[in-house]
Length: 106
Image 1 (cartoon, one colour):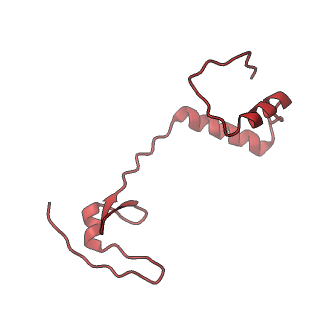
Image 2 (cartoon, rainbow, N blue to C red):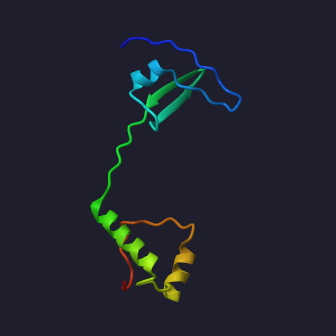
Image 3 (spheres, helix red, strand yellow):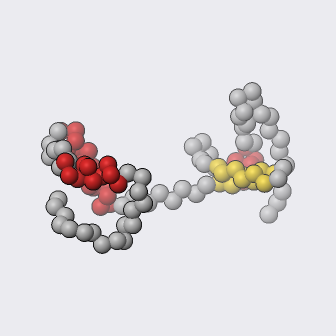
């Protein structure tokens, strides 16, 4: 690994331009993301690799839901007992692997 030394000037708004040689070495371009890790009096800048994973089942469901909401179809209020139960659970830790008590009606 070779060493690159560049100097950037901080603007009055607290912004800097990452020098071209550094951008090229990191492999980032406009819209790229960088992470800054501050330790002592040093900052380590690294490229953030966004590994976006799109779940086709969730994507399809959300598209269907968006369509229904936009059209005003299949939308009803929550049953009162469910709404009260949800409000009562606010701020309480939920154990997702716990068994469900009672009947579930969808």
